[in-house]
Length: 157
Image (cartoon, rainbow, N blue to C red; front, side, top):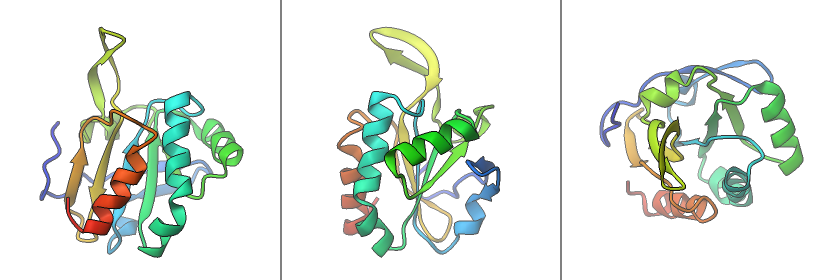
């Protein structure tokens, strides 16, 4: 499914590392950055998460909510968050249904081979619940958080 900028972001309900159900609707009136990543504690995913962590003061100052979503479960998210001192929410999508709604699961190229998996991507949802920007494929996990912050600061999708 394609996510269109300017359209309503698909609603979801997922569990966080503590087992609490979290919804997109609870963050209404905030800019929300939803980043989809393949797996906790892998090199690219760790660089991306730590990039958002390092930019946290600037993001928090703007009132931005960061939600990281992967298929990993609560125990994995807890260990990952604690190991890297991640100050934002990680959500579990083991069925990959939310990822599918957001175009973050499907066919991708990995080392020259087509495979089915999580597509590293990010969606900026404005306080009105509409998609402001969709980074469909994140080519460089380590520099992506800075690009997200720059887009937020520019106020443009």
